[in-house]
Length: 531
Image (cartoon, rainbow, N blue to C red; front, side):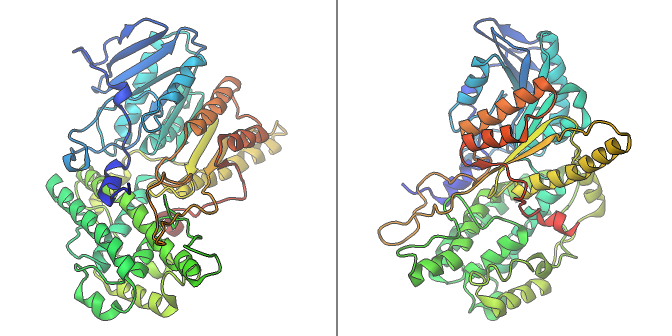
């Protein structure tokens, strides 16, 4: 059965938490945890800010504990999308669907696991890091035999992990910011560009920001979902959606709507590979025109549509959430040169963009379109929220899919670039002092996409009923990948340094679908390309 667009959107960022649902007994915040002793001692409690937490410690505890920070959860209830309430259920480790084998593996090997549900949902890095700091101290007090704490997390939780490692390296021995969210301004620039592009080309009723209430943002989300649903049909028929502004139809109506959608994806920085579209496969014989046309023209646009469906909920709700915290609008593209944004991609995707003339026409339309402006005071408040500098203080491993549509691989590459400067300076200082060369403290693992994975039904239509390909979707890792990273982190925490490069490369290969390759450098998020 093929998954509908609305169902796909409903599961974006969802975490299978049922296995960790606990009933917290009424207790004073920050009181000693309530523990049930057994083969695995399980403790629960509340931090001083009211965040529920859970700790699980095996009887053969070896002294190393893994602190997990979960990713972005919606800070409003979304009953229509399957979220009847805001969730703050504590989560002590990664869950793959409903599979808790990663946590079971850690416990069976003598490692403890712990994590919270955080006191606030949404973009909550400041609050989340404060919770993590307190929770580490609480855990060490409860289990004084603790020798090492490994911090790891996904998405926004990966961002928190990096913030924690930069601000409080004394508390942890190793870190893994997995599918790490970029600094907030980079993330929201991608979201804002995507929403503004949809608004400008396809539906002027989309706000794309400047939300005055949760109701406004949810109504806008409905418009975006409806438009993405309509665009699926438009790509197939070549007919622009009914909501398309008349000036667009007059100026660009002869250009296929798929080309405008692809341009929006390129200027935003969305990947052109997605869960089911690889950008290199078509129906029928590889030598046929149908195969080539689909691979070059249809597949990139459909990938942007599928990735946009994944990112749409977060784009709207994260924008609204940060606007609320900042006190006003935070997206500004009054000075953005979208032509320069896609300068290196126009030739690569010429077929999908319908050629140079069509591309120039679409860019001219964007250049003349009304822009969004931000409130300076609100931008200042946004920039005052927790951020990362890209400094590596403890042995660190990143892992991200090369076609992750929400936390682009380029965000982890930005961290690697920042560390390259730090490492070069450390080596130069050591050489000057005739001291031992410092060890490299950062390893980047990339989840790679297969060469070909798009499938078609008997009629030649794309079949999107299968599972998402490796390297695509958001934080789309297998239990084997998580466990491989966990083993490397445990070794680093014990020794004080990363395993040898060959050891890490071998571990990545054994995970499946993962590589360590210093020559592979994904494009940075558009925000950093202009910075």
